[in-house]
Each structure stands twice: as structure tokens, then as C-alpha cells.
Picture 1 (cartoon, rainbow, N blue to C red):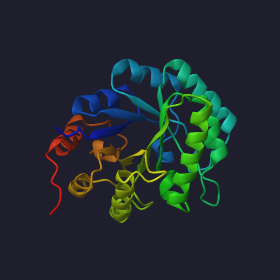
Picture 2: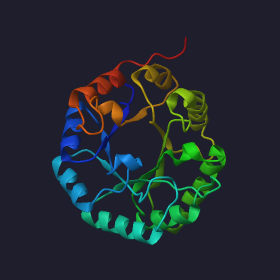
Picture 3: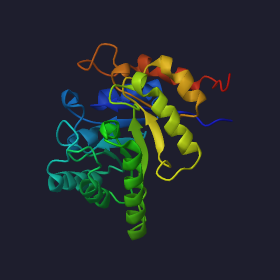
Length: 247
């Protein structure tokens, strides 16, 4: 039997979380301030959501719009406080002004959340060189793993392009092939998100992609309205259909 595809839904509050879980979400990404494309949620919001649902939560570590790390010390302090509150999974990703991974910032946070799995988010879609970013982060992951028993980077959230899945489809399929082939730097799971539509699923699933991330698609009435359980259920049902390969 094939493994169930993972469906991750963005949640801003307990109401979102409960609706997403009821609709069939497997995991939530917790953020605040979607006007800034998702920032670190308050600890009280995390605690309230954790109390409301029993599916895994990945908490965003990001202090400002864009992909610069900003005040890394403050972000590390917030990550430590979230861990103390019970957070066990995270989302992060930072670039330097020239589009390279900000390894110092990533390493600092990775050290604070050592032992926790985490996603490198769509900063990869703004990278100057996606392949180089993956290989640099893989080297960092191995270095950190040698120092401690860290779970570490296990996922890339990506649309394949800064313009979304429509533009990034060929990149997603090519990177999935490299993941399947076991290429260095391609071990982390690809979580497809960013302009993702139901119509993209057949080609993505046929290529072996099995993790999907939705935000606005779970909110038919926009970001000012809560997650709609029926909308999430539509995605769950689509992902649970048999995968058609080849042809």
C-alpha cells in the first residue's frame, strides 16, 4: 500500500487549526502576519493551538518580511522560548543579499533547535543557485549532526520558482528525480507549496512527490476568514485518490 501523501495547512489560530485537522490536514505550519508572508507566532498562540489539536505543528522562525535573518540573537531567544513552551518542529530559511544561504544565521538557529526536524522554506525559490544552496545546507547539516544527535533539516518548502508552481513545475519534477536518485543535498523531502492548485496534483503525484502545503487554498473567503474544513477536505480527498504513473 502506498504511503499517504502529507497535507500541511497554514494556521494562524486555534480556529484555523481545528478546521484544518477536521478537514484532514496531517500537519500545520504556524505563523502570524500573512501580510508579511508569515512571521513567528506569539508563544501564547502556539500554546493555544497545541492545546486545540493533536497533529504535528511546524512553527515559523522569521522576524520580518523578506529573506534576511535580521536580529539573529532575538530570533534564537524566541526559538528557545518556543521550545520551552513545547514546540518540537520548525520552519526557517535565510538568504544573504546576493542570494546565497545565510549559513551563519541558519547554523545559529539550528543549534538552538537541535534535535528538532525543520523545513527550509521558500527562500530556496529566491536563491541565486538552488543546487549550490542545497549542497551548502547539506554540508552544514552533516557538520551539525557530527556535533550532536540532531534531527535537523528534513524538508524543503518550494514551488520550484518564485513565481509559483506553474512556473516551477519543471524544476520540481527535476529535483524530485534527483531526490529519488539519492543525489547529495537532495535527501530532504520536497514539500510543494506556493501557487499550488488541485490541477497540479496529478503530474506532481505521478512524479513521486508526496507532500503538499496550502495556505490561501484552505481559505475560499481570503486571509481575513478562517480555514475552511470543507476546502481542506477537498485537498485531502484529491491526495487520497490512486496515483496514476506513466503514460
